[in-house]
Amino acid sequence: MGKSVKKVGYDRATVSCGILHVGVGNFHRAHEEFYTNELLEADPSQRNWGICGAMMLPQDGALYEKLKSQEGVYTVTVCGRDGKDSCFEIGSLANLVWTGENPGAILDRIADPDIKIISMTITEGGYNIDKASGEFNLENEAVKRDLANPSSPVTVFGYVAEGLRRRRDAGSGAVTMLTCDNLQHNGDTARKAFMTFFKAQDPELAEWAEENITFPNSMVDRITPATLPADVERLNKMNGTDDKAPVYCEDFIQWVVEDKFANGRPEWEKVGVDFTDDVTAYENMKLSLLNASHTLLSYPSFLSGYRKVDDAMHDRRIAKFVCDFMDIDITPYVPAPGNINLDKYKQTLIERFGNRSVSDQVARLCYDGLAKFPVYVTPNLSKMVRDNKDFTRVAYLLAAYRHYLKYHRDDNGEEFKVDEPWMNPADEALINSDNPLDFLALSAFAGANLRESPAFVDKYLHMVEAIRDNGAMPTLETII
Image (cartoon, rainbow, N blue to C red; front, side):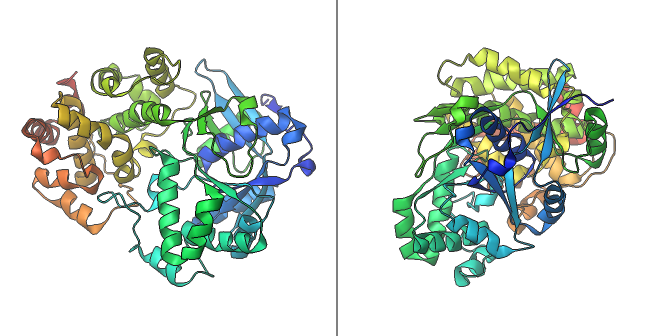
């Protein structure tokens, strides 16, 4: 017998879409959709804030068909750190559009006066910011194609630009672009990306956008693993459901948003969202402690043979490695925001990482390191180089990352594939080089000046040699 599921408690026919969300992935469905579903339950006056999911990638088709067959309804299983799980039916995804079926539908939605917010989860790398210059890359082939063909876009930038032109011409009013991706100052990054594209393609649109669009910064947090086929079967059996697109996540959830909306917003504060004038300290805390620690534990754990995060975190060696990193290397650079107790926050992180019910995949944390390092690790690493700190743990991390990218084999001799969607030929050449110093010129470390620090270089070269000769875990044992 499955456990009881908390069903949608409102009439979905009374819900209209006030938000268009680009990128209907697992995290979005466990986070913004979850909060919005709670709000629609709590306050009938908020039912003009349903979400229309916009799916733009060819590979989105499979999920689109599954969700469409369920009229956008799906389940989220919240996995408690105490081993007790709860299941919620989510009804806030009130409509779905996919470019593979109808490209014009997204453009129509952007132009729709009912849509007041365009939110997005397009991944850290999806903003097309060059890691070395920090500027939007206008030489990207898909971007160049959209600049030349405004009416038939293929990128998110092209779609939004064409949709906004229609919105402006229809007099549909101002709109907020709310990014929910893990980036420091994510709203500022979105603003730079989209406004650079608008200026290059259509200066008149850019001028309109300056007056009619806001880009709030936000900090998002909820560990949400990929849902594998075995998980679908497990979750349905556990919950007594028949959901083609279930999601599972941890019990912790947080969303801090800069209250800078151009045309109204949901009253998300009624369901636990924090609105503030400045999210900087919250962003810095979360990215520097949670996300950086995820990256820190990922490559050593994977090379040591671990495939589940909770299994890795129940290895006292890895747990101590992560704790030392947070306490010694990162805490000096993280002022606690608001009334948050940083020691309690860090302890909660350790509990979250070790949550047996979530059992996140180490491979998910390893994925797309070239986009993650510049956001999570390099900023504080640059400060450590400036201050000539102890480089033991971060040098080991970079050596482990190089070993992971270069050799594709773990301590047990098991081969694996590397998934780095933003890998370019220059990075590939640096990884393949037999001189480990070349790796420090990787685009992911731009601005850290690693090769200019003799102390870092010495420690890093020692770690490269030790991991190659002895393995990732035996080397880790020498530094804890």
